[in-house]
Amino acid sequence: MSTELKTAQRGYDHAAIHYASDADLLAVVVPFLTGGLTAGEPTVVSLAPERTELVRKALPPSASTQFLSTDDLYARPAAAIKSYRDLMAGLVADGASGIRIVGEVPPAAIDTSWDWWARYESAVNHAYDEFPLRSMCAYDTRTTPRHVLDDVARTHPFLATPDGGHRMNAEYVDPLSFLAEPRPMVPHPIQQTGPLVELTDPQPRAARRAVIDFNKTDLPAAEIDDLVLAVSEIVDNALRYGRPPVRMRIWADREYMVITVHDTGDGPGDPFAGLLPAAREIGGRGLWITHQVCSQVALHRDDTGFTVRLTAGRPGSRHRAH
Image (cartoon, rainbow, N blue to C red; front, side, top):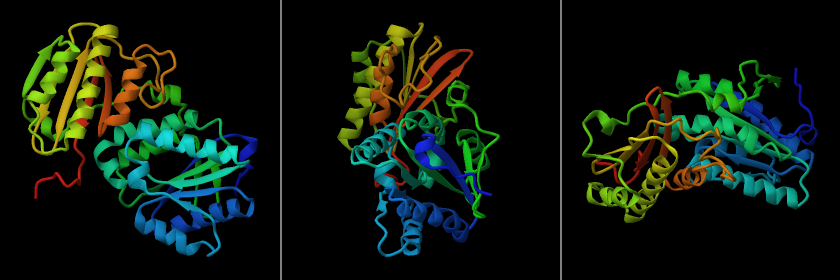
């Protein structure tokens, strides 16, 4: 039985779809989108190309649904939040009283950088709540790892099912609680060997210089420039707002450059730090910039302090060795 309500009556409705076949996916998505079209609501789809075509063919030829590329939209969580907020603000300004979106985190991102996408799935419950939005996030149970599905269950207030059901999710955890939980930092494969260099209490200038001097990658200069900026911001944050000692480590090969910055403090107090623009949070601006420019950012708290890991290089890019 569906518990569907009009979007504008309750703000953001964030649902997960767990599907095991194309038919399951279409059984949820097509009625959801056609219902929005009938109500005169803007509808948006951002799925992998093969699933985009399935949905496109299942909708009426006259459907005005907007289709967006996952590669562009889901490059980074903070950028995805900004893009969606800009999109929805424009739709509301044009008179939309309800918006429907179907999307999915690209499989490559799930495989290689799920941690910050789990933070994204939690944070959007707050970041989009001002909009009259209903969205559904699709996860294929045949290919999605169990730990990812566990996080999906804890970050979506509602569940949508192929039989037409739309129900509250008893496993849902409020973002303030979910984002405050310590999350394990799974080592990047390049970290299986020792770092190329370790610096203690480096000033931002020395940190920037080290990135340039120890760059062994074939990555574009612009990507390394972004990493230099990110490292400078994070080291400055650690020196200003963390507790000494501040330790910076660098790993690099042709495909990746990975940098960790650790201090013995507690890290930022804002659970949304990095994912949303910082208004007054101390050090929040640096994390926001870093989340905009790096291929991956991981945050970790434990009894030794706070660690930020920055990664340049993307799996599947043209820079991977053949």
